[in-house]
Image 1 (cartoon, rainbow, N blue to C red):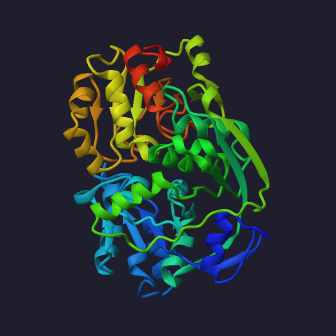
Image 2 (cartoon, rainbow, N blue to C red):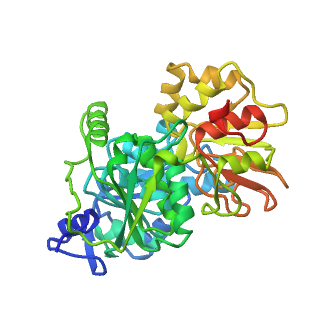
Amino acid sequence: MGQTITEKIFSEHAGKDVFAGEIVRVPIDMTIGNDITTPISIRAFKESGAEKLANPDGFAIVMDHYIPAKDIASANQAKISREFAYKHDLKYFFDEKDMGIEHALLPEKGLVIPGDVIIGADSHTCTHGALGAFSTGMGSTDISFSIITGGNWFKVPESIKVNLVGKPGEHIYGKDIILELIRILGVDGALYKAIEFTGEGVQYLGMADRFSMCNMAIEAGAKSGIFAIDAISQKYIDERKEANCGLRAEPKLHYSDADATYCQEITIDMENLSPIIAYPFLPSNGKPVEQAVADDLKIDQVMIGSCTNGRIEDLRIAAKIMEGKRVAKHTRMIVTPATQKIFLQAQDEGLMNILIEAGAVVSNPTCGACLGGYMGILGDGERCVATTNRNFVGRMGARTSEIYLANSAVAAASAIAGKIVDPRDT
């Protein structure tokens, strides 16, 4: 019987053929923690009586939510992770000196390898499936178990096959494709499933698109999102290898068999897709941008960034639209590059000048605004267009505020107009 790419990754790690529904314990290649979740894992680690990590070079801590610290509580929380990282001499500890949002930084550093099993105490850990890895979020105590033992238990997920056809039109990106898929599936339509993206349309999707799509697989309830490695992702891997003088490990490439079993198949015609806007208060509440334009939705804030859409491609899209223009009088704009390297690259390309001269505020890499922590909290009744991944009640601040999820082109064009507009018309 044929296997999906996800079943093959688990089979390779289990040392035997396994299929969807089986429960297996497998070694973990990379475990990820951040400044919010890691202290809980550290407490469980200490309470267990453990003295050392099973695989120190397979544990990365990225300080990305409240760094630099916004208050005394977040400073003390960060201190716990720092002291643990120094005590165990962690090779992959990323703090203010080398900042980045974890799900953008780790691939950039060559630490995400095709064929890996990756877990992180952050739901958007599924981002890394864009590089042919099985990657998923788990709880902080699960993370502790992994760093103590080197492995963890999984139920091998069934897979949903998403067949992508057609060539995306102007200002249609991975964000629109995944928002359309979430609209189709609903917020729990892929519960504990692996979403496998395939089809002839994949050739038109760059790595930024793929990262965004896998990142938001969790918003349909999925355990993971995944793309098989092709020429585009192989080029990205080769570039990471050169930039970092090597990768963390050797890639192991897996591909689904032609007779693999899927629990569901969905086709998305990218050629006839409009930019999708997810209305409050669910990512599944997607509507074509034409509807948002008709609704005449005035906005108070625009946020471009996050682990979903804070890459150099997003900043290029925004800068191209905003060059020579200004953010609307009654609208604020925040731009958050996902890593320091992206920040510097945007600076070198002149993108920062364009965005700042247009009236945007550029922040350090942080998850702060996305989760309503700091660097852009919304007030009562305010409306925001964001390239982030969630628009739940109170997600970015006041419970009466509203978040509309969109791609970077919609966000940039809307910042200029002061209301949601179609970037294809600007």
